[in-house]
Structure formats: C-alpha cells, structure tokens
Length: 637
Image (cartoon, rainbow, N blue to C red):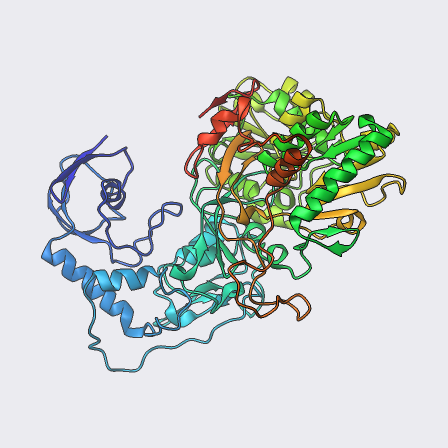
C-alpha cells in the first residue's frame, strides 16, 4: 500500500487509488467534475490540478489521473495549482449562462460550489456566449445544453455504465453537444441518473421543475419500495407532496444509482384519489371513531362466527413492523388464519429463499457486480428488478460470462443492450465449476428453487428476486407463525371475514366473505368493498423497516408529514380555507400503529415498539447500517 503526504498529512491507501481519492480519504476536497467514483477517471475537465512537490512525479498534475505512489508529496494549496484551477473555472464560465437564480440545479451544483470556492467572482470576458438548442428528452428529464461544461459524465454513464445507445456526444469544430440524434424520450431504464450525475444543471428532474430549491425540501434517508432489492434513496418533499427522489450511495446494494421506476414513483403518493379519509359504511368519520367501530364489529363477528372464521391479512409491501403487529393481532384474537401473501405462488419463492439462504451463499448486488459467472433463471430481470440487471452488466463489463437458463427466461433486445448472454436449456449446461465466484439469480417464475441449490457447487451464491420490498420479512414471519396464503385460506371454506393491511388480494373474492376493514394508502378494490376504511401513511410518511431479497434489514425514515398536499387537489377534495393548527388529512397513521390502537381497544395492552423480543436487534438500526437476518433470525452485520 503506497504511503504519501498530502498537504502535510500522511496517508496510506490501497494500490490503484488515485491522488484525488487519497485526498478525499483524509477530508481534503480537490475540485473535480469529470471524475466520479463509479465511473473512474477521464481527465476531461482539468480542474483537479495539484502540485507534486517531491516523489516519482513532480510539477502540476491532474490528481484524478495520477495513481498514488510511495514517496509522493502533494500540495493542493500551492499557488501554481490554485491559479490553474481558478483559470479552468474562469474558462468554463466564459460560455456558461449566469442563470443561478432560475436554475433548478441551484444548491446542488458542483460548478456553483467550486466557482465560489476557487475565488472566481469577476467576469472579464465581454464577448458573446456560445449557445445551443435544447432537446426534448421525455416527460421526466429537462435538457439545458447551455449549462454543459463538457465533463463527459453523462455519456460515460449512459453508454458505458448503463448500456444505453440512444444518447451520446457529437462534435463539430469547437462545438460539442451531448444529446440524441433527434428529439425523443430517453430509452434507458436508468436515464434518470443523468440528473444525479451531472455536476451542473444540464439534466434536471422535470417532474419537480421550479417547485423548490434544494434547501426547501424535506428529505430523509429511505428505501425504495419498487421491488425486493432494497435500493437506498433520498425522497424529497415540500408542503406534504413528494416531488422527487434521488439515489443514496450504498456500496453493498445499489452503489450510486437507482432505476427510473424507483426514481419517478411520486404519482401514487400524491394521487388525488388516494385514501385519506376514514370511512364506516361509506360515511366519513374520524380515525378514532373508525377504530372504535372496528373493535365493536370484531367483537360481534367473533361472538357470532367464532375466531376460526376470522383471517388477518398482512402484506409484503407493508413494513416489517406492520406485519409483526398483524401477527400479534392474530394471537390476541385467536383468529383462525394469518396470511401475508395473497396468492400461493407468490409465497413459494420467498419461503424457499428463507430456507436456503445463509451467511455464505446469499448474493447482494455488489456480489453480482463482482461475479465472474452469472446465471439468470426464470426471470425477466430488467422488468422484475432493473438494478439487478445493471449489476449483471457491470459483471459482464468486467469479464463475467452470463447464461440464461430455461424457457422461462427471456432475452429481448433490452437485455442485449445491457450484456451479452448465452441461452442454455438447463443448469447442468453451465460451467459453474470453472468459475471462482459464480452467482445464480432466480426469478418469481422458478418452479423448483431447491433443485438450484442441489445443482450448484459450494462457492455459488444465490439471489432470489421477489416482487415486493418486504417479501423476505413476510416469509420469515409466515414460517415462524404458521401463516398460509390467502388463496389457501379461502379454499378451505372456513374464512367468513377478514382484516386486510395493505394487502393485494384477488379481485374475485367470494361475495359471502366480509371485508371487515381494509387499511391501505392505495385505492385498491378492497377499499371499495370494505365496511371500514382505514387510510394509512406511505413509506415516506413514517419510519419503518424493509427486509430485502438477501435478508438484509434496512430502516427508512419519515420524509414528510402526512396530510393533504397544497397543490393538485380538485375543488371537492380541497380542505376548507380556515386557519388551524391541525394539518388537513393529517390524522393518518402507519399500519402498525393502527393495529396497536385496535389492540389497545380490545385488550388495553399498549405496544410502543413492534421491534421487541426476537426482533429487538433491529431497533438499533439507523439509515447507515443494516443487518443480515440468519436462518435462526439472529442478526449479523
């Protein structure tokens, strides 16, 4: 490991680390635009200049291009280096528009930060600025080419990292243009990352355009609920409206990026038809009144039909806390049935994953990126889990061989843009024994998951792709509490009524089964059929826990207060224009708290924290930590 001195501080770094990274490791920030940890070096912007005072290299050097070596003595504050950086910033600002007051990137702009930090405050150039014509890139991304500083980050990500082909760089004489051959929506399912990766305001989130500055947002670390991967995000809201979502770095999981499905998922949270009012037999009531009515009807139902006729139904898209409380409610009432999955086939893969995965054979996204052989079975991976497809691409770029096994696995043009693959009829046709770090990715359509483990050598890691953010957690609870699928519960003919908690159940339920109550934030068919409607908070309006596909428990934090947003509501939904300390529609509760309040009414027992008993280790998690759940439900980091 090379040892060097940067600004009179000694530092030892791993082989292959460049000087810019070495400086960052000890808190010294060298201005940079083209370098990015996920994309590596490019040497395009020339703003990361440092002075090498001693060692194998001397003089002015670009720190992103220079590997750290023994004996180097580096100065980031040398007057020659500072003058170089200041000059580069001034060159960039010659053609850059001075539109910070109206630029959507204001407050998030690296050029803005480094211009101020570099001391460039007086414009000496009085000529005409170069201008470009912007392009239409779809409904989600705004293009403002005049702000470009030619750092090449966008094209390096889009083409090299994400495999896109419809966006690139074009040049003629002294003009360089980043865009498409013609106007049109960007085709890559990862195109939204251009917003995060651009150091200026060339690409901004059109869905939140002119809605707020960076410092206006309510934001908190969160977890994407779009699939089972558990990608880390930072949702941003204002005035109780979710405006946009950005990626949050987690090297074990999503790295620096997220997919467009997770990024542009604001609409259901802000939807005008989202359930926000508690109802009893279709009549608006307060949440307390609705819970009182439910407690009364539950007592009558149990007295009339007995506990065996009642089912409590949780959901793999509900937080772990909510599902734990569903189990406690079942125990309190002595209900005959507990369910966490609507369909039996949705439960098979999560239960198999819980039984087969352990500390040494589970594959994270980072494990897939580092694999030298990847097998994809029964999974349209780009449709089911886009970020896992991006992880497979990184493995392929590093030399891994990719195999598609079985007729249930598709290989359409979108896959071919991401990685080259070979289709084989069975797992026996894959040379797993020749690989040092193979990974098998199994999708929801897999018929016999246990056979995969039996056919895989001991070094093989497994990734089971599920449909919902908490499928793994529900499978653990289902195993421990003896739950069955709702489909199976209905088939046995005993269930006469149920309580649904954020449940996605079949639309063709028998008419003789009562939906005593439905708690949800989506306008599902159950909400319309339910006797009592209990609106709940979304994941951005509460604290909670999801357990991803590898059994990794992660916490998400409350981003915004629940309640009606101030924009986009139809006149009949708009609250009365009266001064009040109470937020209109702000009496929503997380599903687990609704169950807690119901239990309090039925037994006078108050539960302050669902994460107790065997789940207690999860209570200490924060946004920067996670715990891998073992087979015995003990936790290990």
